[in-house]
Image 1 (cartoon, rainbow, N blue to C red):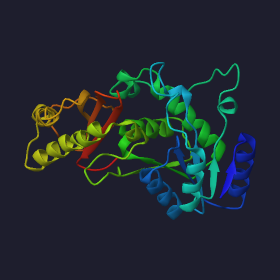
Image 2 (image 1 turned 30 degrees about the vertical axis):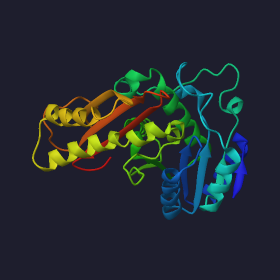
Image 3 (image 1 turned 180 degrees about the vertical axis):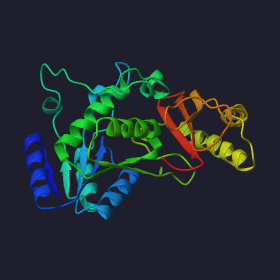
Length: 285
């Protein structure tokens, strides 16, 4: 595995690979790699000649009161894990190279970035779309692989790719979970033992809603009621939002018809850790 830190070097490598008719698959990450990330890498390796994993904790998607400084950065371990699982190139740029002094340019997707996560985390998606476009311009991939756990992010990035005519195919892979249903996340390492025992309820509420829908329940308010009843089983986390929306404009739906996103976010009581999860009714992203 080749580790690249320099932006121009990475661009030149990928340009040469393109000229050599090599197909490039990119997996953007913020590091602290887990099995979820590795499942994305596996998809990139299956579909492409060269797999590129980017490792960059992007400061522009963190709010002033969020966990940028404490976000895990086990760089050496990440390199070992990525190499062990077949990554060809690991691109890990310095923050000053990605956002040099007097940096002024950002990418904004309107409307759908102001809802759900966007309402809770103002400016978050401006940071996400900006860094992803920059990474696309540097790694020049044919495909890029993201996880469904960040469903709104996937929807926003698909809109950016379509609106800006970007020549990259986005693949949205299923959420990987622990045996008890908790979605894999780098932030799970923040949890206390007590919190870790209770946060699987986050997915259990979603699963209950899915079961009720499969039994014929079509009213969103009733599905939300089932989720809330599940979350009442613990006081160790509190829901920030429970939303049932369409998968294109993220508008609330009253009656389920067609592909629908159920998205939830919570904060834990002891460590103030913020976790998100979701399911898709009627299809995939």
